[in-house]
Image (cartoon, rainbow, N blue to C red; front, side):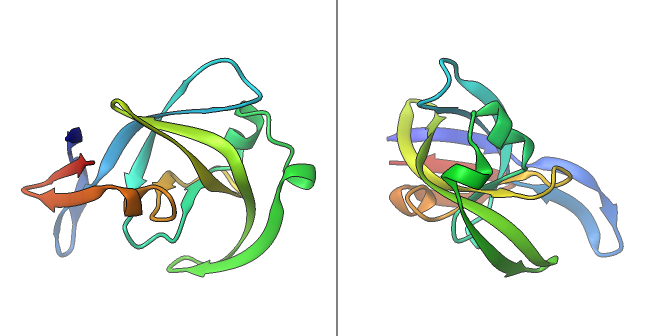
Length: 136
């Protein structure tokens, strides 16, 4: 069953060629708010779990000091503090919905990353012809 088919977004011309990113529109909510919040995230099959900028903790009414487990993580950009939360965020892509774990970064200058744990690993992901296809 097709969940989403989204074209990559052109981000600019680099030394090696044109740069495209696999952004996807998703809706997020938590048990603490009564609305779906639209956001765009990069589909990142290399991310262990879904990560959001810090501002989304406030939007979803998550108290990072009370609700989260703090962990240091490493990636291409170096080390970062991540606030990990279980069973707080509900994600919707097309008609597919699921409560997933989420990490909040301590900064807001990065895009959200849609990761594997309880999300991409539950779906069939195909990236072809500058398009992201998610199927159940």
